[in-house]
Image 1 (spheres, rainbow, N blue to C red):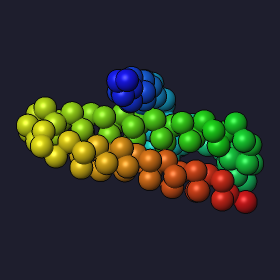
Image 2: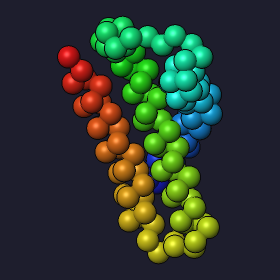
Image 3: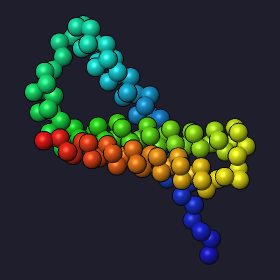
Image 4: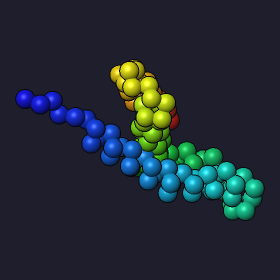
Length: 117
């Protein structure tokens, strides 16, 4: 029997991460990095942000916002090293480093999001 490849799952994570990074991250950067910070818009206060962060759907949204771009990075970096630099003999090490880093980053995001009082 042939061993099934996990490549389709990795490509789905790559695609979803690229979509999230392209559509949602710029909005957050514009709002929190410029509009609220420079006074263009009235930003929510600390108490309101904590109240919003306590909602489970907000935590899931922020987890998706943090984790999917990490998997996009991992897949892109893996193929940069594998195809671009022709380091094919270190395939297993590169996979472990890239996707392991994305998993560790996701675990840290889960811990931080669910440790909010």
